[in-house]
Image (cartoon, rainbow, N blue to C red; front, side, top):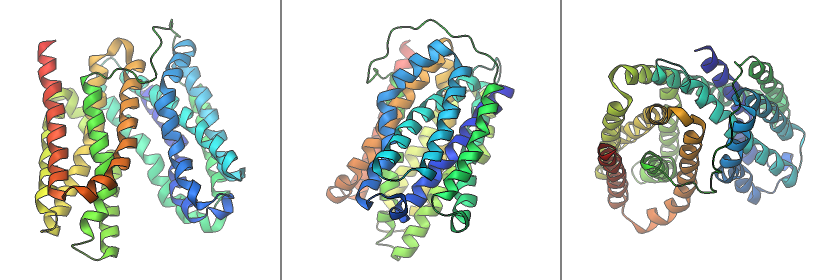
Length: 373
């Protein structure tokens, strides 16, 4: 488990600057020399880069090996965090966001590869990695936001850049991994397998549409202030669940089977979405309960899906994880684009029942296809 802890800690440190930027940049755009209209481009640039860049990252990783790729990406992550502190203007910050997107892609893959490389207890290892990874953004959002008035909106990223530099010696301490011959080049949009399709549907529905429409569902039942607060607490629950329950979920996956627990969690996710659909516009308590169920099961599924992917493709974990991550990023990028249009043109009942039905269909397709293998 040593390599799991090390690689996940590297990613947690690297994520601190990115997590805080989402809070600081919209409020202090002028201090960064950026027009408020360009903030959305900057905050989404890293995800767009990942969608197109995972294949290149995998190719580099196959040549260098996981350890050297982690070392390179850790140094790059520190440089991008310093860019938020010292850079000014759209072009400089965009360069930092592009660099961060590639750095995250590399560190995300190597963290998963190290977590999946243990001989026994893959689920526990992946769960532990998920909990450690989530602790970085959680601490940054709590402590970093409190320090902004003292360090300044850009100065805080200099502090976080120094913190991120600690990831470099940790990467150097990772066990050496042999580079391997490069396989067939991965296409720009790799063909998704059934698990990739399932993950795409989940991220599009939950990470995209559900996240964007949370407060909108509540605003007609409670005050605007209460809607925003309730939505924030529901989303905060996801991070709390990942930190506290990911290791437990991973251990249970090893004991009872990741595939079986994934099926149970998917059923609970679908049931929670149905509850949201039925409670919308009627019962705020049941609505929040359904929202909490969606958020909790989504956090647990993150660990279980990764554990299932590791078990299905143990011989080519890096490429398997890269395809999964690519389609997850596509889903979470497309979801917000569809959310506004769907919310305005489809009833809450129809929208959320449709999301539940789509996830159920994707889960059924995965199950039936697996039986034919």
